Length: 201
Image (cartoon, rainbow, N blue to C red; front, side, top):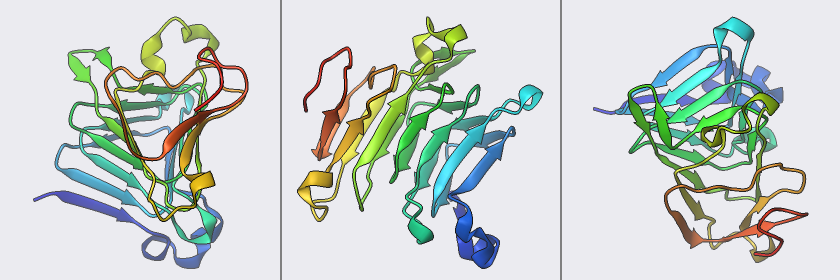
């Protein structure tokens, strides 16, 4: 039986969470999502590194970050020094923006004895999604800090055409680097500003 963790404003703190955009807030903890587990968050996820505590999420199961009440769109934010490690056959569904603020999303290669992999799905249903990545100045030579494995873009056909895309935003210092596969089920990728691959879509 799949273990389910459902986080909603109603079941946690009632209306007091109306001003909290990240209902899954990891302030330096170590979190393991096992292969049989489903973490469903009606809102976003933020991971912060608090010194010796090392904010780390290891995902072997499924994380779903959905649109929530109050305009919170299911963003995924990995703070400076924090880690989100995706393993083979794992999935992360993001309905909001993906921001890697010099944190890590190790989605390919090796970490200890484990192969890393997994799929990140951009499935936002209300508006475009932003993809922004940067690498800490001390680890710029380590591509493991920002490379994704498999990426799926599946924007619903009901979304108006001008918003049906994932944008690699102007100001990012790394492009969307995909080690495995890119699947465009519905939608597109739009680049802005000056990126190493140039502009366009």
